Amino acid sequence: MFKYLKAIMLSSFVCLGALAARCEEMPLGVYMSWELAHAYAAENQVSLSDFLDNSLRLCHDRGVNTLWVTNIDAADLPMLQELCRRYEIRLVANACEGKEPGYYADDAAPLRFRIDQMRAAAAPELDYWILSDEPEAGDVAHLNTYAELLRQADPERWHALVVIPKMIHAVIGQVPLDMAAVDPYPFFGPNDPNGPHTPESSRQYFRETTENFIAACAANNVEPWLMPQSFAELWGPYRYEKDGMLTALPGSYLHWITPTVAQTRWQLFESLRQGAQGVIFFQLLPTMLPERGTLPMPDVAWREVLVQEETPAGFAALMTLYGKSTPQFDELGRLFAGLQKHASLLRGVQRLAAAAWPLTCPASVQQASFTQPGDNRKFMILVNDDFAKPAQIQLGDGTFQELLTEKQYRDTLELAPGDGAILVAIEDK
Image (cartoon, rainbow, N blue to C red; front, top):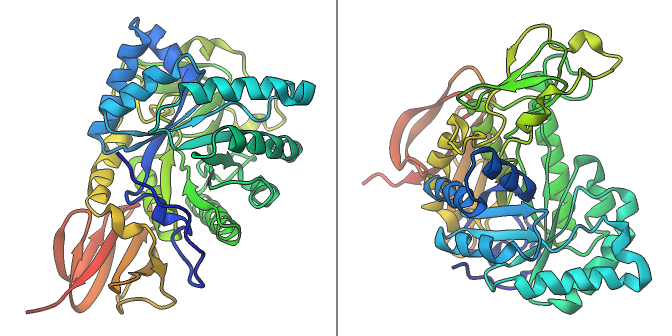
């Protein structure tokens, strides 16, 4: 299904991932915690296989080609691999959780046992093992032991992990990796003292983290993927409505909020503009389980930011707890479908120091220009930073095609709030 080449040498240019030649198709996907699949299958009173079949069919219909799965056991892996094969979705899965200290007892014998179990259950299509999910500094030594054992047992598969922003330099370059993802979740609740909660601070946090991460990956020959936000997290009481909408109840702490449709597409285009080689949204299924909605309000010092009245908190994931698609997932489906038509364009390209064409953009529009080595094709990625207002771009005298929609433009191009474009010039005849 997916053909890979071995790692290519880093060029002196700023690249969209030094190891881009491994996969001709841009990985576009979703993250799924395995325990949530079990929970929502039970919530909907269907079998796990039926719930997953519906979920992966929805993913396939929305252009998802990659599934990132954590916490799965060897006994469940064959079933998931078969479903991924059915819907033409590549699988990235955990071998075991590298942070578990018990695995390293008795000269790592428990870890060897788990590795052998997972390796025996893995199908050829599984090409990345996830070493860990958000390791801390104290996990690095263990992860090096883990990676060495896993490489000995299963040398044909590559190693990956997801790292939190503050741990980028403590992990990238310290743990042997082929690919890594970072999860700069930028949308915190109103007036949240723990993270960015205005459009300006959210954009700045996501952008600076992404730049830092991609530079670290380039310096260490690690392929960079981005893991944007598509979830909400509450502390304290909440309720799910009949349509799957999450409601924060008085006294709860609205920590991360569900990104809007505009914020969702902005994260995708900004990831591409920064140089991500894969984009995996967290998460497919709501992390806030219905039965936990009766938890008491949190005891925090910042009580002034606690919810004062019932507040809609979005659908809290790309799918509702009832297995339905959300507007955010539908929008990603539109964008993923367009990106897949030009999947090879974004793999293995080189960033240009100057703009490919002299467009006139408002301050809200960010841009980056790239070229394809070998045929010198140029293209530009634009993104509208404004989550509320459209942006008008003056194209000058040229004619351009926007690749995702395949529409042609002269004179002007309008970007919807948070939207982006991938432009190539068309020679006038």
